[in-house]
Image (cartoon, rainbow, N blue to C red; front, side, top):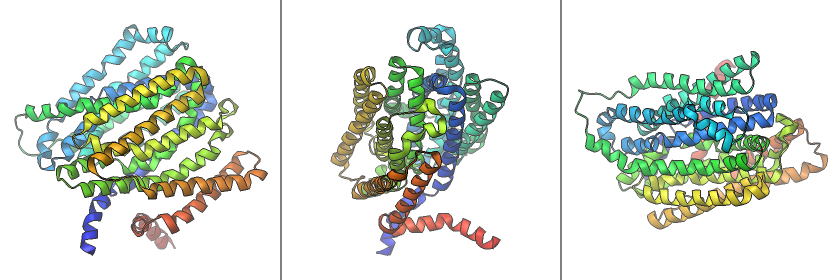
Length: 508
């Protein structure tokens, strides 16, 4: 019986193997971005911060189209056939050259006059055309980083990609931005630093990839049939990623069109805070796609269910308390960013709820995209995108920031619930259950009780807000350790912290 349990646990233990590095890298990037965001917001104000975020949203939208879905397709291509890994790695040059060349088209169009048209007709912000052009120069490099990231995940070694994308890139951006701010630049310090950070981090990753992803054995004639097989499903995966990003960006883009740059800046600040909800979940999901593909190829639905369900349960344990803290205290971002970032608590609540849903249900899409049912996933997300566009088009002009948040939440909730029902009906596996609901309820209830009890003496200062959140997190951590964590969770936590305990013991 013990042997059976160990065998069943093995996929998830191996899945957690790189999680500490992934979590550390993402945490570092989020921390740097958070601190830099605070400095930027205070120095340039909500208006210019909003203009930069509109340009960055355009870059992000383009950067999910330009890889042609290969950032996901190569995970499936490499992960589902480890016995052919060396042969398939030699196909990488072709994929990279193709996507890099295509990614050069948008900045070329912006330089040829499209940026000026956008500034005059859509986003009527002074000098927006130049900001957009410099931002889009990063697109080819961001595209190749995405493709290489898919490859590294496909070979179950995401560490080089994580370090380049989440350590090198934010560090370079912070250094260049700091130097330019000292020299007196404001908005342009951020724009140039963002572009340069993509280029430098790409150079680092590309250099490492020449050694890591070269393949082995004697050169062979390229198998064009095998190469072509990737493009049988990569367009659908590309469309899925495009729809996901556009669904996430629709609220900001519509708000930028119907509202002011100040509205967008405040909304972007809320999103910046809410992104912390998915921090650990993103780290746990780095190699999930290829593992699901391999389980499905081996017709092992039990292992696929276990990997997905355990991933979502543990995501909830670490995401729910962050969600609850933002839900009750997130509207106080003006205490950090300044009075121009005073926001509505209802907008913060809707944005946080949307990010939480996205974190919990998002990776369940691998049950479709990595198992040959990618077209169904694409259709589902396409319908969600249309719903998002319609909802934003109706609600944003009337309700502004609240309308953007409500439209985005409604779209994400609909997609998540429909996808969950589709996965259950197709595979007869349940990947979101009572443990997820229980952890969420405990987190929200605990935060609510702390908020209510301390409300009579709350003076709405930064120090007292930090105290309230700390009390809540301490109470939730105790409750989770006693009632929500399994023995396996405690064992994993103990293993992760054992090096720290040993170093403390040696120091003592």
